[in-house]
Length: 275
Image 1 (cartoon, one colour):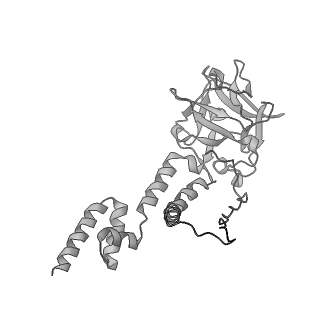
Image 2 (cartoon, rainbow, N blue to C red):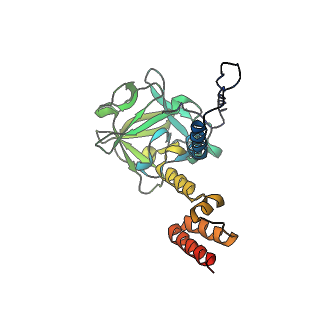
Image 3 (cartoon, rainbow, N blue to C red):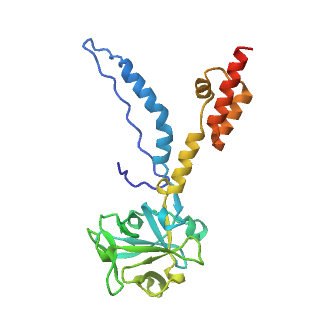
């Protein structure tokens, strides 16, 4: 289920407590044994999943394949600014107020107009960027950027090209082989889509919510798999473990040779039993 976008620091709503059903006598009816068991098993798995879902921190995309979900496009302006749009489809920039010491790699959104939902278009290497109002970022033949269409056509598709000599930055290329560029001018920041080459003014940073970054998600899953309690280890071994055995098994789980180590522990247990 898609969750509503939240910003760092926003208060999270409190979860409602379940009210026990009442029986005919007006007292609380005790839950059935089967229901209690099911609830307990869900509670064990819930904390890790909840931690991933609630991670509202923002990180930089390192490669194009990272890009997914809510993103911000940080423009290469003198002071960090973010590509934005209004409900009428006008595209412009808004200053990145949350950037620490004007560092674009720390920029985070403070306005929903700065956020775009990125999706890779099936069967292509291109991406679409949907604004907060449900319409897609597009670029016409004159290089004018708008966000006014509800469906993705050729003008709403962008190739994300990593900039070779500027790590962590990307060129957003239209289907007409032009690039989105941003320049500081006398009348403010000028953003358009008619850049001919990848250069500084077309080198953009893409920031995204950490929970959608594939490598971070994999790392969290690996870390969750590494965690195991002593009680669980003893259940698998079929006997009580001493401190040294427990440490070895936990280390083996991190290093990937858990099953071999567990077999050794079981064999040792059998030898001790018949000694």
